[in-house]
Amino acid sequence: MLEGIHILLTYACNFECDHCFLYCTPRSEGTFTLQQLKTLFVDAEKIKSLKWVYFEGGEPFLYYPLLVEGVRMTRALRLKAGVVTNGYWATAAEDAVLWLISLSEADLADLSVSDDLFHYEDDLNLAKRAVEAAEMVGIPVSTISIEKPTLEVDKDQEKGEPVVGGGCMFRGRAVEKLTEGLPRRLWHQFNQCPYEDLEDPKRVHVDSFGNVHICQGISMGNMWETPLHQLLEEYDPYTHPVVGPLVRGGPAQLLREYQIDHEDSYVDACHCCYSGRMKLLDQFPQYLTPRQVYGEGLS
Ligand code: SF4
Ligand code: SF4
Image (cartoon, rainbow, N blue to C red; front, side):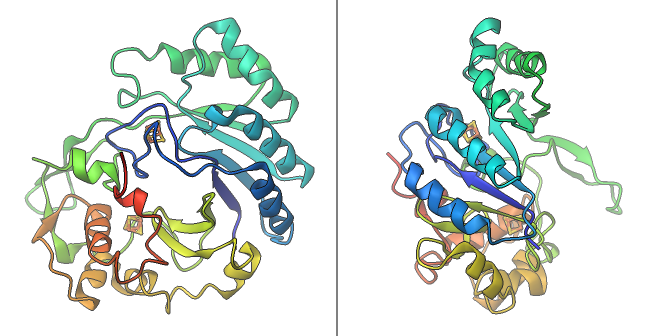
């Protein structure tokens, strides 16, 4: 049962992080209009299990009036609203408070701020100021911290071989930028998806193109063609051409079922999954979309 909708308010971001799942850049296209948000919320009201709506991106503060209105619409449905941000707007303590007042008045229930060295190479003050400002105006605040990939000893492996730590998942730009030189495991060991509940998603990400992402870049369908509540009712993970194999045997099964020409080893399950999906883009364009989250068509 779906509990959360994560609205990718825009794919545009003022940053261009190496670990970004969605290949966001300042030049990325795909921002919700107010009318699209209204259409989505009319439909969201029909999803009775829904508890949360998160606004993220990209960087949702780049479209601030739309963000505030989205939080208001969420509260009008008596749902909790959250925002994920890189905190770029917290340029000074007083200014950071100014940015947050309208969101506080709209009853924002969670502000998640990225505060790691991926986002701020040598200066975490922006993120810290954003956190302090949220505390001052009474918005519950948390931080998201992803470290650069580190080597750790996997105690489950017999020889204590090093594995990758640091919380980074290797999808999107992380595959292109961060996998080189990291330890790998044989492809057939990735026999399940470790992160998403693909059979019964508790959350989906939606974008302005209408895509309903089960995991970033894997679409359930298009909500501008079929209403979201109907897509959720009709979703069958076992017959979905990409999710089906993932449920049956993880990324390794995806490679097997489609006889994908693959490498012997990958850094993690997402690296294996994403690399396999890259080879299926032309076969399943309506399910592996939008192409920009696979690094295509970016300037
Ligand atoms: S990881 Fe976040 S802050 Fe970095 S480019 Fe992607 S959306 Fe922007
Ligand atoms: S294994 Fe695939 S479906 Fe699962 S979280 Fe990683 S990229 Fe997403």
